[in-house]
Image 1 (cartoon, rainbow, N blue to C red):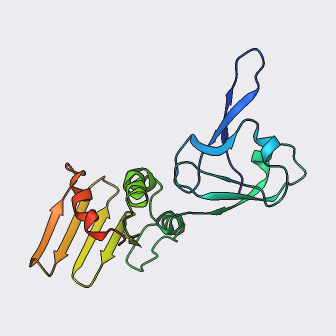
Image 2 (cartoon, one colour):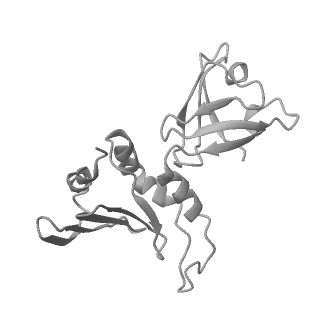
Image 3 (cartoon, rainbow, N blue to C red):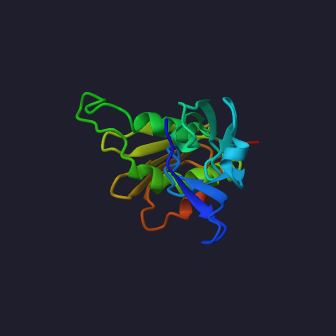
Length: 194
């Protein structure tokens, strides 16, 4: 895959690159920071060299330089840090009618909608959820332990639909957190890595 970048320059006079941002194809952040500071051409010089997206921690590895002097035209391999991003990337490439009921591929805008939650899971030691495509182009995250389960459905209409079940407390509830998304953290924290 080829990557699109944004160059930060020192000043208008010298035009030297001091840092790069790029449009990350994994987390879909436009202008995501990378772990290479200064001139990327001095840091990434041979096949196998890598940099990391500061937003989603995916690793980009140089595979082929294609006889080009522009590293952004080279071929890169990507290894998403999180299986959440890997699955979402996979589901955004599903064929039309993938479920034989008229299902559409996961819409690219879903990356923007769920990105902040995915970061929260990674930063707060929450178990990675099972990631499931939804036929309307949305995505659902699912957690399941012996006594608790949680399903978060993110729809293309920016709705957040929740099903929570706690057998120990005898709770089974449906919620709509569309207007109160911060409440998700209260439920998700029940699925921290021990």
